[in-house]
Length: 326
Image 1: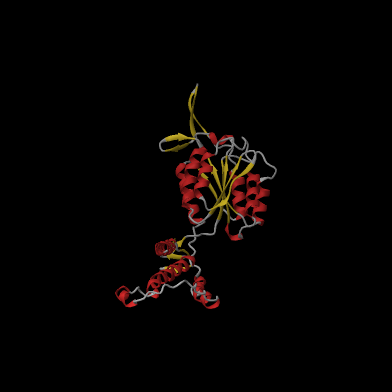
Image 2 (image 1 turned 120 degrees about the vertical axis):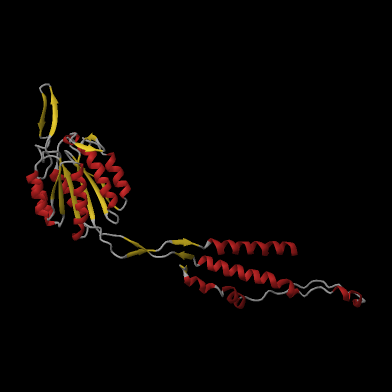
C-alpha cells in the first residue's frame, strides 16, 4: 500500500491561493497604443485573447505545485508485514585460549585437529542459529578480555571467534575472571535473559577471583552459566617404547565446573569429541530456546522521487514556454 509519512504537509496545498488573496494585485503596465485607421482591414487577423494564452501555463503550474507537495509529504510503498524472531536473550560465550587448547584430540572432517579448532567450528554453527539473540564473546587465558560486546551482528562475532588464537590471552586459565567479566557486562540487562556459556579444558590456574566465588557473584546477579568441559578421555600416543593410552584431560576440573553450573541454575556438559560438542549445542538450543515474540517489520520503499521529478519537469516546460513567448 502507498503511505504518506508526513501527511500534514498536504495542508500547504492551498498556499498559492492564500498568497494570491493576501498579496496586492500587480498593476498592469501602461504601454503606448498604435491607432490604426481602417481597423476593419485587419478584421481577419484578430489575435487570440490573452486569457487563452495564459490558461495552460497556469494549469501546469498548479499540477507542478501539487506534485511538489506530494513529494514533500514523503510517499512510501509499504510491503507486507514480515514476522521477526526476537528471543530477548543476552548470550555471552567465554572461550578458553590457554596453551592446553592446542591438544589435538578431536576429529573434524576426518582430520585430527586441536581443541580450539573444533570449538570454533561447532560454536560458529551455534551462533548462526541464534537468530534474534544478542551475543557477546569473551576470550580468556591468563587474563580475560571482552572481544565482542553484546550485539545482533552474528557475522562479526563469528569472525572474531575464528580469528582468535591459542595463547592470545596467555597460557594459563582464569576461569573466575572470565565469569566476573561476564557478570559485569550483563548486569544491566534484563535479569531473566542473562546467559553465559563457558568452555574450558582445564582448571583455574590464574586470575584474581576464584571460580566458585565468581559463581556466587553470578548467582546474585541472576546470571545462568552453562559450563562445557572440553577434551578426550583417552588418546593413543606413540613413543620410543611403542603405543600407549594417555588421558589428555587429566587437568580438567569437572568438579568445579559442575559446581559453577549448579550454583547458577545451569548445567555442566562434557565434550569428549566433536559429536559431543554438536549434541551439547543442540541441547543448549532447547534449554535456551529462541523465543518468537510477535514483532513485525514492513519493508519500506521511498517513492518521493517520482512526483518530485515530474514536478521539476513541468517547471522546466513552463520556464521554456515563457522564454519562447518573450
